[in-house]
Length: 233
Image: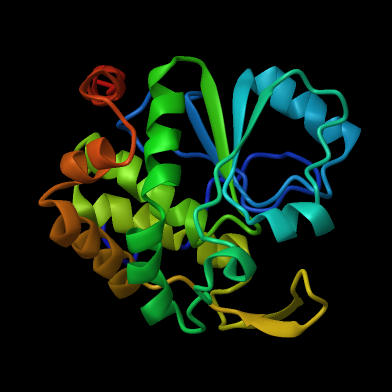
């Protein structure tokens, strides 16, 4: 697989949940890690689909403000919901989110360590985990890429899976407009391989390695070993 092999996303049918797919990519058995956009429009049929897939933990990477405006609709689904915001609330932290993807990705690496470590810890506990943000491409993409890196997925395959969000979300032809949680019209940009590589490089720069980064943000050596023990094949 190469960076260009991303034109056929393998999407799973969960009604009104965008970009829902298995994130195993050959390094995890199917059904252990799923990724998607937000569940705020999910129907009862979609919740039934998540139940059938055996999802045990839902990790929501969005900000508190996003949750206030667009709470996940779980329809009584019996899952453990974990709010692990990958980006800080600007009103509380004083740190505005960068406006360009090239700036956003290294920033996510700098501020998102607790969320990435929390996702790894959830996966280490066993059972199926779903990780999502708003549309499932940037925050979710970095989180899944960190898991893939931990499991030793070759970079070309890792990047190719990351880029599958573009056709899955209709971004393969360029940016599309959307309305954010404050009611402002903005543009949703396609994901790009150099930005992901920049984030992963920033992680290594900050702590020497992905392992060092995760350990510094709350994961344990036992968590890392448990996730690596899940490796398929």
